[in-house]
Image: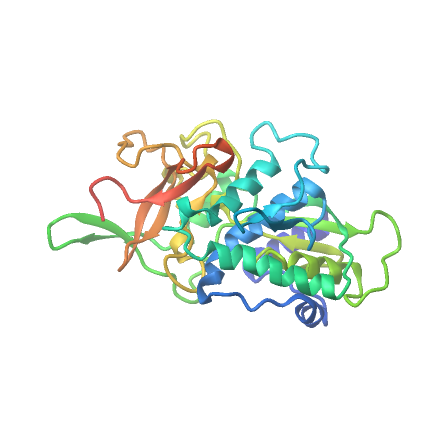
Length: 340
């Protein structure tokens, strides 16, 4: 337990590092020149896919996904062998996977135009490299979580977020704008850090090019960019963003929802990645309203930042049901009524 606490403290500042030589090994085995320069903006989605896949199958690797009849990335499995059942406050791992993969669908191309090259093509390229090197992937066991979105942790991170400022437009309307954080400001993206132990189901690790079990786990996780943070001893650390948290906290008021804006928090989604618009989609559980025009007099909506073409403006997560089946519902960062 002490080692986990130490690493959680390290992650809060600079992050855990990989062991000597680990980066070179895994990069040589499964490096991916992703198809678009903006693929960094999709790392949050692919990191969440890696976590959901591990929750579902207990592993992640090159044989978990293939292309479907529409040419989109799809799971090769129909049920979750490693999941006894969905948590009472969340959906199943398989539904989370389907929702994230729905970013490839035409209904979401407007706000996720590079989902196919950045999710499908990146996975297939990394999988091909792993298969070519005959890499056998280990089993992952989630043993600890840091950065849990408790009200205390959220309030602490909220203090490090850039403070919104009010801008008056030429027509007299107002918008709250967020400036990108400056170096040394203490800003860090809100994430939940999952610590995993990896092994080959109690059997000796096979002799293969990736070497140690932890190195092979990192290589296998490369099919979904952005998930691997580093290593701490024998533990692998992965870190999906809070706006992709599938947990239903029982309501959207400050006492129930740690992300409620009354706690001073917002999801800095448009700041994610190397280019605008950053990320636009969140998990369905993060949206309190279905209609963008709904007024929020009680302050229930979780706030987010949205790139409007010139500024990062404060917006809110609303329900996105563009694809009718609940298996594909997500939330989307959308402007407030009457703002731009």
